[in-house]
Amino acid sequence: MNEFLLIGGMFAVTFLTRYPMMFLVSRIEVPAQVTQAFRYVPIAVLSAIIAPIIFVQNGQISIQINNHFLLAALISVFISWRTRNLLLTIVLGMLAFILLRAVLI
Image (cartoon, rainbow, N blue to C red; front, top):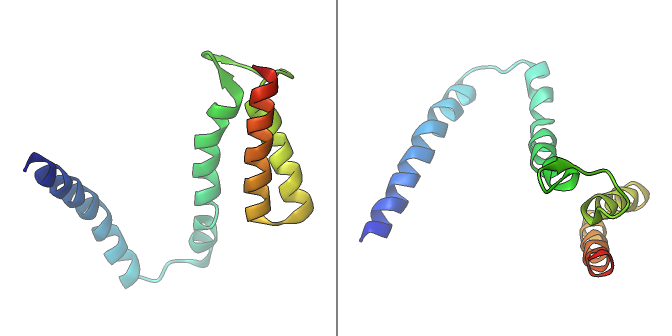
């Protein structure tokens, strides 16, 4: 029973904090510059999540050749740049990460 209360509480908090803003934005005219700025939000959020994983090892910044996270990220960026194919980038990036992790550990 506690799980249902927990899920219901999480739903209520999530819904009540997001719905008023969505309601207001749907009722007013948002300037074009703001709409353009919103396009960069996913990239900024994803970068903020991924950057510490790539660059921080054992609590210190690690930009070394034995950092398999950094090497796999560089390989993924190169694949993405050359192919412009998201699925191929994800698959080959994960494969590169797995291979580098097996070799470098």
